[in-house]
Image (spheres, one colour):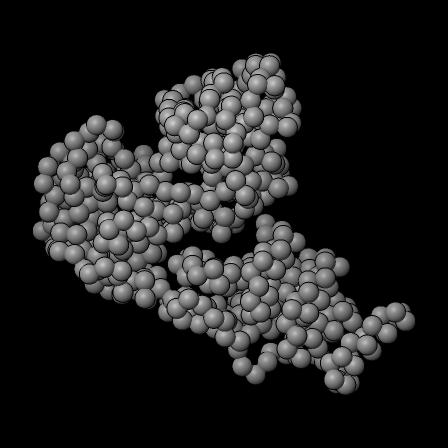
Length: 511
């Protein structure tokens, strides 16, 4: 032990009111948990505790952190654990930084938590550290008054966890459920008539999704989200899953009515939604999980919700126009989907005084992407913003071309450039691009779903049925897919959050 460290420890011991006995190799929890004020009920977080580290891993900085924590100096303890972790190799490094994050949660200081997270590579965690990482993410969600996200984070089970960690996870689940109850049982407005029911937690809900055929995996992912949300909300009513790939959706809808359901979620396929829309009269409300073509005849009790790409294009256009960036270059795929994005972006951008200087439409063949280089280079001095639309594969090939020819002009995109699955090596080429993204992906950079955005759509679809009257009366909710609001035409639209890539990792960003 060097002399400088001995002096430092001696000085700290005096500040802590005298000498202390030798501490164990783990923090000693204080006698009672710390209560953290919230808008409704207080969020009482479990106290952190650190399993005994190998003797070779324990040093004086960790012992100091133990003593700081024992004295109730949480901020100082968190900072000491964090810096102790930076000096270690995984898994000790990750364990100590996660300990620092837990302590930051009971301060509470969410900005410190988010800063500490940056030092963790969540792709390379042990089973226990993965569970603890998700546990601390749930604590962060609770502190940000997002109990639905906290519950979703904690839905996964992990084998062979320490009993103390397992207990804390369950306590946090209970805390999140208690925070959800006022939202579900106390609607902002009186309950509507039976046609527009806002209290479906004790009534059956029919779910019309494909269980076979080409899009059965999409149906399964959507239903997983719906089922998880129903379980999270402690709903006493049942979900009746009906196979939209087996029977005509109109037949299924009529069967659902006969079973006494209060709401119908689905279908997903546009052809099935159109089939139901042709009924004309829908005595039980339907929340479709996609949108029918503009101009299609739609009955009054059909509501549309989905991952509409136009929502994101409009949001990007509005944001960059508000920033005073009024001359845009569009790099758009030459496809029907690209035309939809271009039209939505252009309408909004022009309405706010923006000018589209040029639109480059690229083909689907990657061998022809290099021809974009010269076209983009000629626009360097004429535009102050570039809007790119494309798939993850297209983005990884075209964005580097854009950047090689244009370093100073900001590039914006929609969430479609990212699959939702973490891959820092492959995504490093996207560093710097700003794009819209759903909250679920930002809260779950490591997720187990094949289609995480569809899973989030299912979560929000169920929540809409539970807060339907509030939404119909013009209020909005912040869900897993964005800030959700109903328009007069019965369509739900979303406002997403902002993200970018840093060293290949998705991070929150300012627009």
